[in-house]
Image (tube, rainbow, N blue to C red; front, side, top):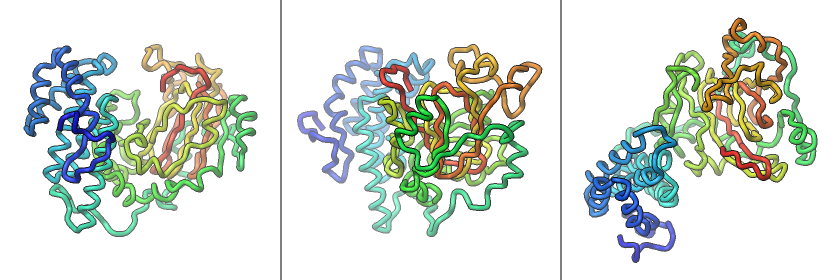
Length: 424
């Protein structure tokens, strides 16, 4: 399709093909930029793909993928991220025309996760288009060619009411847990009260009654709902104890595969799979519509930086660290243990000296080495069990350790002070 004939919006008016107006208009300039950075072979494959060669689309995607992995992520030229998005869109078009809806969605998700911003609007509208076509095919009684027959009737709870055993939990928590100062709870906390008593004072608080209206409160505990709205989408997950451990790694799997791991792993798994600090709600709009940004996130006139998902089985741990922004951690499904140390503590918590990890503590709270880290023993902290439907405010630079006590699905809202230029 030529740029002259491209529609003025990203809507798909032809039900037989994915419309890509931004790609159509930007393709010549993008290919020229790629060529100027040595991507002659890529440009040739992309041109062949646009002319109807499916194999060329896959080759172009492989070429761009190699460029994305040619060195540290920060050193990858932005044009190659856009090139990868371009190849993903081209490949998705072929999969869609073949009725391979899941393969089409995977290509589009990979473009969102790994690609650049130039073609994001095309990727988003294409996902909406393919998802609608896939839903129609099921409603008409015909599954697409790669349907694996896993659709089930009925509802399966993600977390059952009897999953939590507090006496058992206390045995696995860090020493001195829940024995000192507990984070205070407030109900019906006004925005003015939050601003005066906690935001300006830099003090944590649990807010107990601000999520009852969220559809997520019931929907996200329904495995079948999660599978239906997100099952075929590709997401990045962490595998291993936590990001500080040598065996830790990242994988790209479908949301259905992730749900299967969560349900089968449980708290006994030595190698949990965790969907951690991922902008899931930028990627899957249906889940974004199930939540609302709390009014507290606009306290102080700052700017919302990011919404991140934290979803995994019991036993997943985020090690002791601090973040640069104000943070509200909303516990939608399940329970978490959270330990907090004041931002005034730094030397006593032994941060790493490396730039990439200087917001993380060397102290493993699950196995404290008091010989190597003697100062941590006497440091005061607050802690709590964060229950379903509760929000925890964590002020900037406050150190925090988080452990899932059950299967858990949380959302973190980060926002910055006015004028802050710190990235998220």
